Image (cartoon, rainbow, N blue to C red; front, side, top):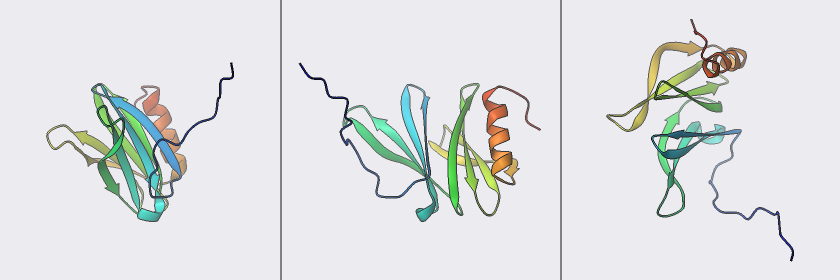
Length: 127
């Protein structure tokens, strides 16, 4: 008996991307995809009935190169790294079921983005 280890295409997104990040929140699975050509961070949610990812939210920006999720104390943040205009943190708003920009944080460059997410993931104070 021969077992294949090849992956089979399940679903495609009609946009080029630089990064993909997955996260779970309230028993749902999400994917955040940075798409610089559409200047967006696309958020998809797993549909348990249709068995595929559906569009959930779209965070727009300028030259987005990364979308990184961070879950802390039952809250979800998406950090959107941009080449220009600073990078921004968005917090999930349960009442509106979408991500809203969370101030006053503005990240200045990719290095700051990496240090910031590393500290958040380790539970360190970010000031």
